[in-house]
Length: 136
Image (tube, rainbow, N blue to C red):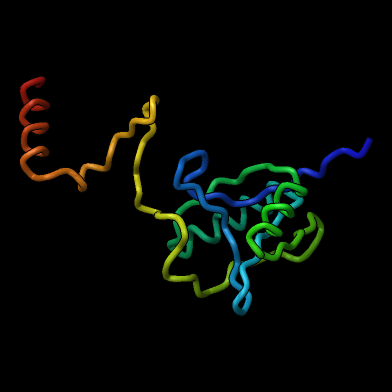
């Protein structure tokens, strides 16, 4: 039996409905980097963060799952070997992502969500503020 190869990828908003996987744009194509080493993936994530990119989560996943995903979305993929050269993020990032870095919806079960405060009307915010002040 062949053991599945585990690789590490970068995910934004991990385990939410707004989850997105990090890709590198090469020409008109998107490419997912699959890191053999968790340390290399973490280092790459920190370099992205240093470029003012939202902080990704390093996730372990079966390489075949990523390859299937790439085939279904017409993305390319690249295996970054643990003993290879240091991979550095491109200096220029895309302006718009398929996922929303500022969407802060929190799942509270039964298909309900807590919406970010800025989406609430001012009157509703004032009502909540008074209730909270009453608790103090």
